[in-house]
View: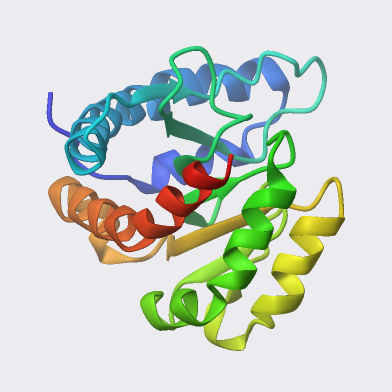
Length: 207
């Protein structure tokens, strides 16, 4: 089945009270869409990178009380997991969709990757569009446009602070008409991933 876009109902999932009820809605409303999106994006990234990539859909298995505030799919070169690897994400909070290249705190080679990015900071600034955003914590909605960001300070923090993260990509807000068109959204996701692919390749070289 083709992905037909996100709806208000998908974002309203995060207003549902209770862990079990919200998880049921995530599983029935959003995860089938992630499967559809993921198949196309995995194929695209595998072709672009010349090696096999694997889809992971967040299960939120460790949660016992608090319902998740967001949910996501991840794509990595490892079949067993993604958190310890440079990876790509598409996901939802209650007010926006995020499309990221993600380096999160479980990554064992953060220091080496951060140093490589700092050495190539000028190239990064030139290659990333000004409306792209950066997050230092994947659990929070907050993100800053790269044009307004002190990139050197952000990368130094990513290098030096154990829990610091670095995610770069795009936010599309819930009222963005492009989210309702499935193929338009997938096109945007592919374009976003293509833009950040040099960062992914640099991170992989630095592991």
